[in-house]
Length: 178
Image 1 (spheres, rainbow, N blue to C red):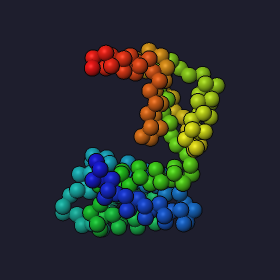
Image 2: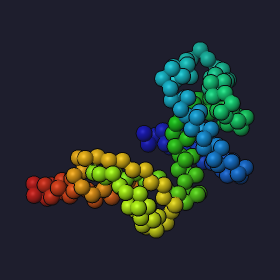
Image 3: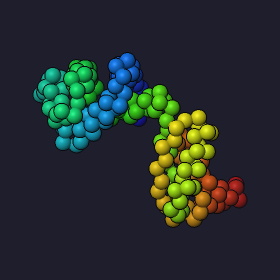
Image 4: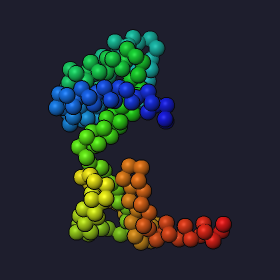
């Protein structure tokens, strides 16, 4: 996985800088996500990895399937990836692009898992507190998991805050066993 990220990083950075320069971060982000979803499809992956197709044919096939959802600039980007045999990196490039975009816009997507449904006021308060702590605009997505017993589990990128009863019981059991 780290190898894919390493290979994808220069392409994602170049696309990001181009989109930033053209004030097109939102458009590029959505178009790269579309192209990545198409490239990740099993059927499309078989076509794109077909050795009898040239790089131009692979790029054209992917662009044709994406249709009007991608601009001429993104089609050119796809052609560059194809000529360098990097079309398989599109999902990773899209993910890295989204990270660069979030960093530029000072936003972060936060997943909050709780044992019970959170009230809107509690969710908003949590978003406010996390926004101050992370110094970013927080986009909260909530879900429930009754296995937590109580409390919440918060994931924001690499940061994980486990305030669940299940997590505390697991830590207690681990401490008692060691």
